[in-house]
Amino acid sequence: MKPEMKVSLAGLELASPIIAASGTFGYGIEFEEIVALERIGAFVTKGISLEPIAGNAPPRIIQTASGMINSIGLQNVGVEEFIARKLPPLRRYPHCKVIVNVFGYTIGEYIAVIERLNQAEGIAAYELNVSCPNVHADYMVFGIDPGSLEYLVGQASNVSTRPLIVKLSPNVTSIAHMARIAARAGANAVSVSNTFLAMSIDPETRRPRLANVTGGLSGPAIKPIALRMVYETAQAVSIPILGMGGITTPADAVEFMLAGATAVQVGTASFADPCAVERIAKGLESWCRGHGVARVSSLTGALEIPSEPAG
Image 1 (cartoon, one colour):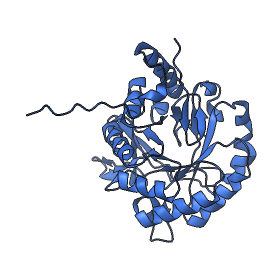
Image 2 (cartoon, rainbow, N blue to C red):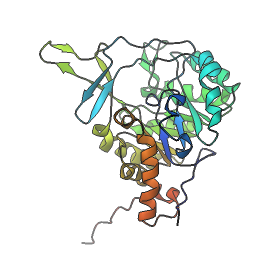
Image 3 (cartoon, helix red, strand yellow):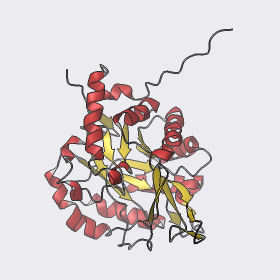
């Protein structure tokens, strides 16, 4: 019997729990000729800012053991160009939800982007990228300061007309604590998590391999840490969790769901295999069929932890 692959996320019904992650799937439409968009649950756009951003100087992507480090610098076309040219073609795929990743360097920029997107059609939800440096707080990243995170999420929640997903930074002491803050401030779901701050050095030149010196580590290397963070977050909040971090196979997706994720995002795998997100979505359905799982949603939080033997 065909398993039920639909999941409910913050009031949205997704055809599959597999989502293409921000920064790895462009604006979505670039993949329409190689990925059957209707086979995945959603995709998250590149981060969208108030004004266009050119991004960091190259080199800004390097390969590492079991992963990659990137320092793209949030390059994007800006909210007006996104609404005018990137969003309309996506209406050809109504079953694939469009989640817009939103960022800014001030609270006002975040709010301005959301208010402008509120006026556009064809958007299902917003993913708030809180891993940006706040220019009004000595460039402290919003997502690592509890007060800044609470205020930003609260303000964004007040103006948003769509579900608000907060993409948490993993570069904190307690991801569970930050998730509780986001939920209390009005987040409808959380993404766990963004990339890990990292760097790489060329020993021959004695120089950093990235022009920006540091960047974000992603890929299979971070999977065990990301999985633990999803599990800890699931123990702390009742809102849905989008798990991510090194997912390359259907079994990886199952692990994240067992740990507490309602849905998962596939990111770095798409650089090695542009069809990865569809492959994993199809593979997850086959996995469920082969393991007698009638509803994929039943996997969420179904981790079984053996009790310690008596005596």
